[in-house]
Image 1 (spheres, rainbow, N blue to C red):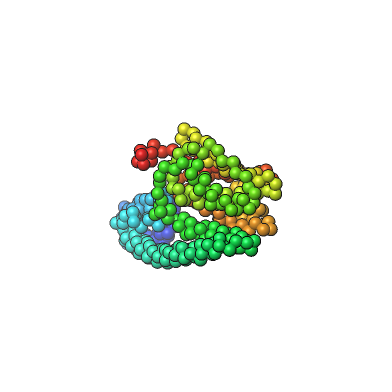
Image 2 (cartoon, rainbow, N blue to C red; image 1 turned 60 degrees about the horizontal axis):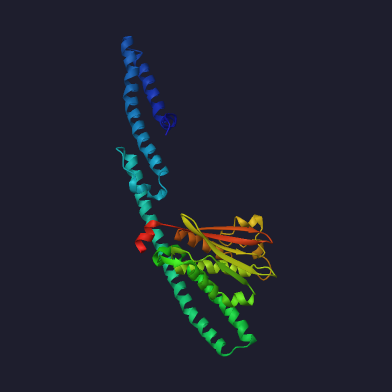
Length: 340
């Protein structure tokens, strides 16, 4: 708050002061008064008005400057009502009371929608668990009645199962910490589990898997990492080329981390799309091609879950050459000591 803007706000009072001084001088004209009295009649009202004006200005300036500094230092701006202290003047008390009421109302409103969201999330999770039963039953029926038609149905059931699993992890992605269990994991076991899960699709698409240098220990959540790896494998299969389909999976152990690489020789991603592949709902040029049916959720979820798990994920791709995804697992002496 500048002094000029403050004086501008007090313009009416200044005009009234000048009018008072002028009126006093006019009032004293008929009387024979000394020059000293006339000067006093000018100075006295100005002093009486100016002192409280300056005191008010510095008091308000200190309060509002403090408000602005505290607000700039907060990541969550709505918390200003919790830390703001009232000043001596009435406006500050009114402002603080208003902010506290607004903050209270906002929290109540947020909690209302948070409850509705949690209720919806619980329903989605329950529905997904329920839908798994008819999917599993359908697969059992197919196993006992194998033919060309049931094989096609089984393939579609696998896709339904993958999409329901994706929906489940999407629903839980904002609360990973509630279902997160860190333990020692050998990368070979993690990769083998994902290959077995996608075995049918890999065989049907005649994909060759070259997995090597995976006898490396990491500390992470097996279930969440399996889901991430499954999404990456499914993308590699979906966007494979027509001939010599290969996926190479290997790890490199460094001093501070372990990096897992998943590399394919598929159709790749155009240069203009590479920087946006982790955006929610982004399908890109490949996702619009006939038969791909991309949702733009898979890699978005991978990125979101990696962030929640403290992992780094990078994607490099060249169109018509292939795609490489690198997941970095940091080494932590604290975690090792806690789990050993």
